[in-house]
Length: 45
Image (tube, rainbow, N blue to C red; front, side):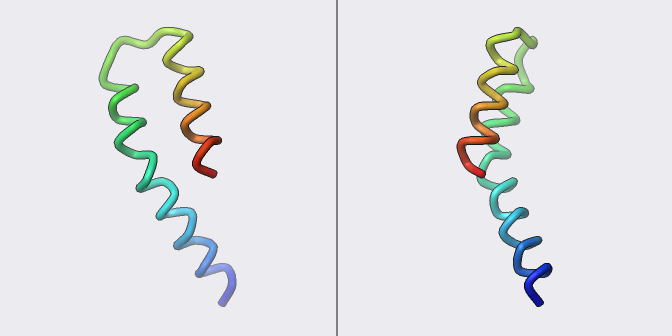
């Protein structure tokens, strides 16, 4: 099933960025940090 495989790939992607996301979210938010978060998420996808 293709959908199942795609789902697993998405989960793997999320797992890969989770540490980056946690680092960014653990500190007070600034515009720069939001931009970094977006960059990290789209970079890995």
